[in-house]
Length: 172
Figure 1 (tube, rainbow, N blue to C red):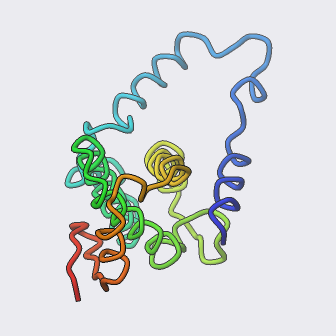
Figure 2: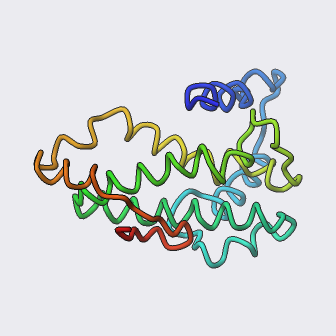
């Protein structure tokens, strides 16, 4: 599955709110429910990777591992971006790409093996999709432009091993 296919699939599965409403609108009750859900599931540091399983207790063990790894990636990426650590960003994005087409593939809509638990499927757009979209937007730029060419060649020639749970890279 190509990244574009996944993004297209995700965009098509999310109907705009105005297409699902009648003329009466949502009202204050729906606003309050939305605010409550948003406060619990917002894409921010409020959801810690250690605590997320309390939010989705019915997720399968594989889904829990996937989300924990994805949230850890997001945390590491935010840190690298805030520190302008371009080498780390490049490594993280390469690791992300490897995970997206490797062990994470079966947790993405559109894959033949995608069989989500009901809660995983329900909160996919709120918990997972923002991280994937952020990574996709970052990939649109030239990730290597701020890395010296000699250093970039060294990084490219090096074989790396990734621990998906910690997002630490080791030379092998």
